[in-house]
Image 1: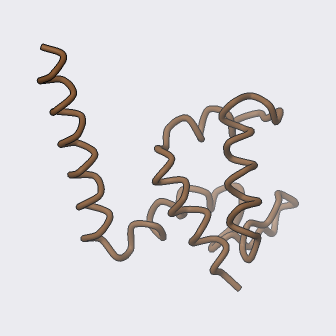
Image 2: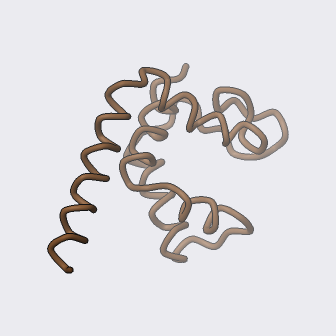
Length: 99
């Protein structure tokens, strides 16, 4: 039973990686969910932190800190738990590439 479960998980990870490779807009689409607070393409106009052009590593560390509870948040600690590490990597790379 454990082996079947492990093989199923490996298959899901492989399928997820395949989906990432197949959708060239995946990073942009994932990052679009941030627009409500952080502005279109990460350019905030509402006083919230802008994400566009920030260092990928800096953004990733903030998201990790939100997820772990190390960095206080009103909503980000919940939002970050809804993404895999691979998805967060895509999102932070996309924002880092914005001007």
